[in-house]
Length: 563
Image (tube, rainbow, N blue to C red; front, side, top):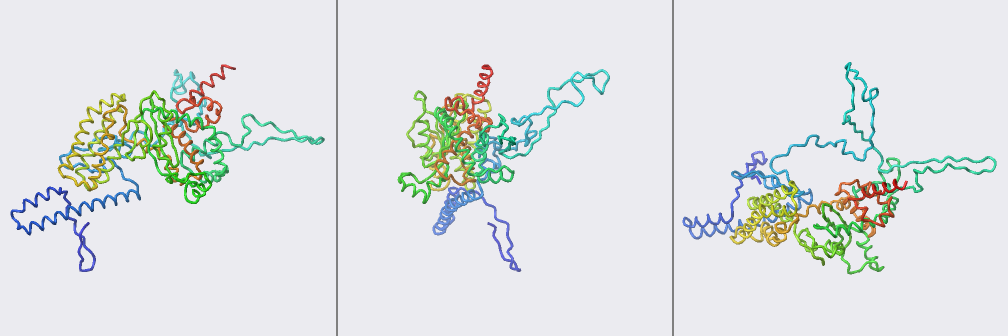
């Protein structure tokens, strides 16, 4: 903080702050010992006591500063964890940061700013896959007609037409009022009513209604009451209670697909898991007490409520599953892996180092998230810039190798060999550096930097599985990203009212997000499941997000052959 003094007018005049210099405490103690020859014992003792006091105060202030940093992140949100943002520009003699792929919060775009792509921020006409296409012929000319501009030329059709995209607004849920004419006989009073057109089914709400409500609620995070207000303003009323009835009834038809999705996830080669907090009103406060008194809830049941996210990867397919309740993520993962084929080897499990993520009764190759370990150094980088720079830049090089392997589309075995050759020596040097910090008494073990070093040392074997097992990921960021679907719901709707509501929310989020990961039309998928409910119940494996379109085409072809 800048020092100040009072002027003749009573105002404070601020002096320029003195330059802050980063001096190692051991180096400072060495200087004190060198000064012993020119100081008396009493003077030397006072100077050494002052330096020792400075060291203790520095450690305390560093720990306090880290707490303030975390509080600031809770209030204002985390800042960027890119190396360039955390470490700042390199000092003299250091090479500039290289570009890397350190996860979602600490990813590429280090160093120089990337040039924006041509047309950045705009969607091409091909992006509007569900749009209605309208072909407009030329007003006067047809292919083969004489050219109006020259005497002998003829016009021909170009392969690429001129394209105009027109976007119009509409209600999320539309409605049509069909008026059937009625006639009465003036003699016998018999009423003759027009027949209902076949395109209008007997149900008031068709399958697309429940699908749209589910997408808005569980895909976009809009609570039922907000959808109700929106629909009312657009002249198509849809009460919140009706919305719940629609999604609840449709969930019964979607349940076989959800169960089949979980079965496929159990066969995954790599499985990520994590959880976040959630609220279910039936399991909180007086409602919980009433449920316990009624015998609906075991009084010994855990009071904490969580949404577990499980992301399974198998042969290029990604499956997202959500489970909300009192079970930890490892308990939910155990239930999923109970469906795993016995002849399959143990999958690779990626999670953070919290014991609740891997304490279940199942066999996996356990690996821990490098980003979680890196983040601890990010949090103290302001206080220990030199030490944290070494760790963060080492991990940046490892992520660069991983990004290059992905860009080159290397197989799992080739990627492993690449990491062993390039990342292995860097990680070995990092391990030596970690051990030397305590061995040479460079870092105080009880300091915030010491805590970060101890965390990485303790979990080193799990953090470096990617150097020994083919296909092992570096971090758990993909699972943290899928949990944002649940967090979005929590921020907007705050809670689930009942345990049934939580189960239905998990079902829809699982189907919706798996379809999003597979880049298929989620709305079309939900509608297809409902309109083919009997076929889905009979053979749910044919109605997964990655193959339902093929099933629809096969059904169309079969129907045409029968005709």
